[in-house]
Image (tube, rainbow, N blue to C red; front, side):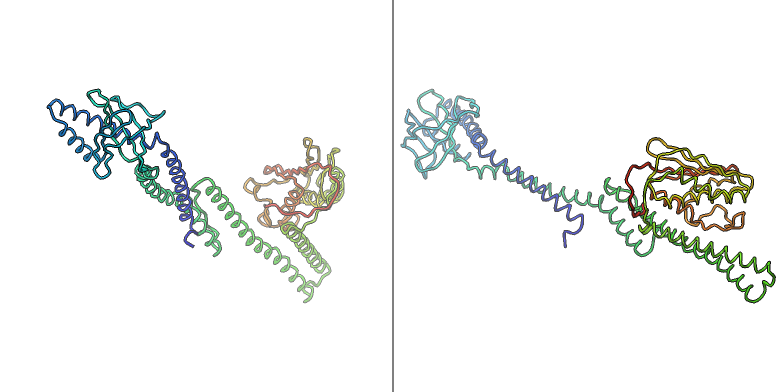
Length: 489
């Protein structure tokens, strides 16, 4: 439980990394310290320094005319002061003439051969030599052998016990490693708290925001701070919140609009039905008018219900497209002929310019629904004497472009970005010039169906001159099959 927070996990990870590095460094230093040239050199250098000081002291004694007893006493004092062992040896067998050690004196013994230091050790100043000596009792010594000042066969040996690898490592490096470990621990604490704060604070704010959203507050956003990965999460979080907020608003608008659009025709139907029942509509003309209004309103309600069902199928991923190769020229020709009577009735000039195009991949009936809706909108918003034009042509080598263009009143710029929203109508009065109300769902369904066909729809419009809806659909050479459309957010 104590390592569940990001800060504690960072701290532990830093400590593990630092401890691993320190262990590796310690192992490397240990093996480095076991090399004789590294482990013994400090002791040899110390012995040579003591030897130079001793040589100077003996020179002063000789100049003052000191006797042998004074010289030996001086050697004993130097050995005591520096914690070393001083011997005077003579001859090829290195017979010990004098030893400052009293408890295990080697005086009178023959030391035998002294192992001289090999390569990698510099020659000491003063004519002496470094070496190692192993006594018959098993003890090991580091020695510095220096000739006597009078140039005779006698030599002065300065010796100290040979340090083991562990002792040398402990004395030379353990303090530094402990200090480095403490410093690294403190630095890891600072880094853990600093970086954890840098990383965790934005995440904590996101956690608080998600809790607020769970309580119904959809106005939450989080600042985009921290490392790039956290900033990316924050940006995606804010985008998600905006989408959720828009979705919630769309749901509220949807309910409000459906309620309004169902209430209006129901009120009209109830009113005219009542007029028929209570005899208020007592003339054939009044009864005919009541029946016509009731029929038109029920037709509008049926159309709205069907469109709502289409939207529901698309959003739930249950809209099945029976896709096949579709001749768009033939499809537009069929749509054109279906609207010729209506165009003539409204005195609108309906034209078609559908050039031969490669087949597109799509559901024939759904594409008929798309262009039927677009042409119906164009005729509805085009005044008498106006023009509605259908056309199609290849678009590059991978798509076909079709468009519906009218000479109606156009769409204001502030409405262009919203015309594909559900229930949105440019005509704020919600009543068209021909007296027929729209549902505000047609273009929303058109956009969803085009997206389901991997196509695009664009609109261009100029107030007072008309609008143009352009649809681009991909060419396909795939054999026909059925596809269940999953709505893309």
